[in-house]
Amino acid sequence: MFTSTLRPSVNKLRVPLAAALAITIAMFHLCSAATEKLYLVPTPQEIRQANIGLPKIVSGQPDLLEDATVVTKLEKKLAWSSQTSSARLLIPVSVRYRGTTNSYCRLATASKGVKDIVLVKLPTQVNFDDCNEVSDLRYMEINGDGILDLVEGILVKSNVSSSQIVTTLVYLSTPTAESGYCYSDAASRQLAPADLKSEENIRKALEIAKSRLGVTVFDCAPLDTAN
Image 1 (tube, one colour):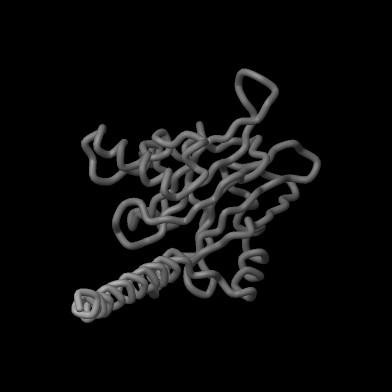
Image 2 (image 1 turned 120 degrees about the horizontal axis):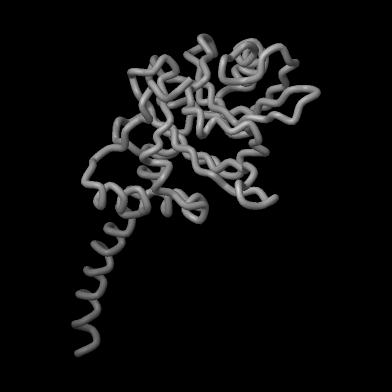
């Protein structure tokens, strides 16, 4: 008798528990889907257009080499900044020149239809002319405006040895720049190479820095120091 009177109660508990579990799983998938929607991958045609247009944009840039044959190479991971009509295609690119050792890692952006390709301006001190490659690349929302930002780790020569080191560059969306993006020295300084291994580590490091600095968003580097 004792056992039979308990079974209905246990069965009744199973129903709400199962429902709660189903809701939790559904919410997880919804959140995952919402995150995935931020990463809008360009079409093969859009990538081809970027490949065609970039060398022309890079040639003659005042903060890069002039009068040299330029070779550009897109990073494998490109993304649209948002799903709006004003979204820009984020184009991390390696820039090299035939017959020279100069090499740059830069970010370009383009409007819908891969038109209006523009290089994001960089202060002189981070416009490295010995960038070997982009070692880490993460698209994530940092400043809370609903538009993807970009965190890069780039391999450059060390100032104190013959080895290469990882330097962090953080690009933030901004309506004040022609490219729609700016380099943030304030955010870049908060990230160590180990932080770049996961988005979670990056977010944690930046949130700790915001609390320590007493800020809610990170600023762009002053434009008067950029080329």
